[in-house]
Image 1 (cartoon, rainbow, N blue to C red):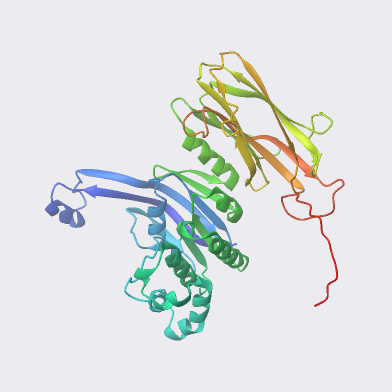
Image 2 (image 1 turned 60 degrees about the horizontal axis):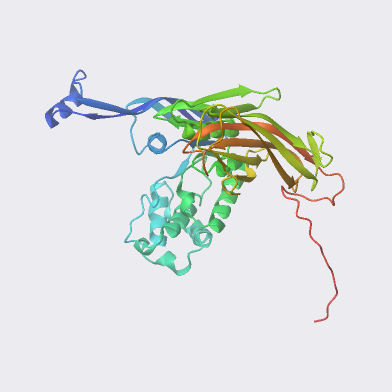
Length: 409
């Protein structure tokens, strides 16, 4: 399979000189040193195959947007090179390239023209752009009168009016309404089936898991992970929660999946099992069966409060359901060192047929961002099978009662 994009040894620094004269001199004399140099990207290397989707994640300031600007050619790297094969379309900063005084229709011709398309080619798709954007009469109104969501609709419709070989999206879809996000993701999936490669920057873990074959994690301008989306996003969650002497560990399990654990260790889970309706430890349970998680926790150091959280994830890593004992108002106050607690979480397995995993968190309140005693992904894996229910599709068992009657007009 051919490589559509090759990023080699990319680095980007911003330099400050003592005077404008020294700055100009640096263009001509290689030994003129800056007074200050800040690297925002270092040693970035990866490739994108035909039809592959790669997600880029990282905290604000990690260098994601700078990297995309270098790839699209709007910013030059200090070192390294980018090689592309095929036509690229990009949606970076919202409305970038739009003239606020021109209408949506006029901006479509202007933007598509900058992409290399002729007026005749644009004529052939202008109706489709207008229909896809669905902004009605505003398509012929100045862009300065648009909301951010309307700008995104037109920008996406223009960028995807002609199927690109490489599609790059930087968080733009996050400003759209749910309906248009679904519509946009459907178009992206169609393009992927036709061979388009996707480079996608997002803070939306669900979108990364649903769309991407790989994920790349940037932190402080460096690539620290490149691999399976669930593994990388789990590590990212742990990285966000890293506090004080917290540490992050990853372990390859027997089935080849990678378990991520992090935390400061004041409290830890000692056992987690799934019990079926008979109270037996089980790996397989039936659709709709009454089951429960038994989770045993031990406190190792003094803490003010203890909260247990959990989430059930499907095989793509998307959370089907999650909550914690902060929200259920069952916070343990001032647990003593050495104390042990057993949490029993009973629920009906109203899930579709498939494999599921459980993530757990021991924290001090409603989120792991304040104190993360222990976060564990793939803490437990179990399977749901259909034993006695009517055949259905999907990730949720929500069996209806269907009535049919004949009626006269």
